[in-house]
Length: 309
Image (cartoon, rainbow, N blue to C red; front, side):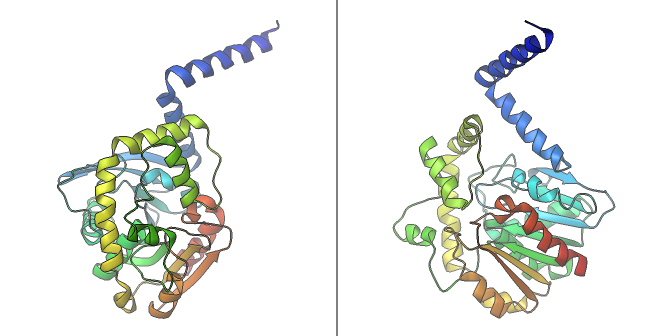
């Protein structure tokens, strides 16, 4: 056996050993590779009672662009999207309190207005007081709350399949909520697979070890997430900011996936009518997370908004 073949065999044995004996190490390597590809570096900052893990990329003196994840998500929802920004802008993507590696205390309030106030404290601690804000799903609701409460902080607002706005039609998730079913938390690996299919119209192929690792994280936090889901769903359904959209001052981009089963695309009609300075972009082949399903195209529209403001 020649040297090259020995090398291939050795690499195969090493990969198999890591895969079966240290799968968490393999997951960390994959996540680290995606972060590097997106030119994002993990950092951490303690502000009051919360320790905020976050990803940061781009020139330190660049105009800040802040990206806020949705329910059950974390900072690593953004590197595929953020890589389109990090050459010219300072990108910040935090784990919100209660999610990812941030402080998780079941006795605290995780309502969207409270989270918006916490987000401002975190950004002030980073020295950021004027920036472009983007949020997906629950993170979009938090972004809306931020825009209404701290309007002078924002250069622009980008809402990606955001909660907090009522549409004409009910989504599949809203119908399930009426039946007291939670479709956004999984209690088995099979349920977790269905959850990913529910969220994404174009599911990104993932190796089984990644799916298992992602599920294990959610399984450890199942009770916390399930309890939080019902509190947030009540807020989304009964305390929307639909009647306050006309107060938004920031130029606003709304991005939505036509096949979103979590939040119905009819919400965009409401925002088109009520937000003073808005642009609506609907992706015909995306679901609830266009920044993951179509990161380049989603980023292009966002970059156009930033360039204009």
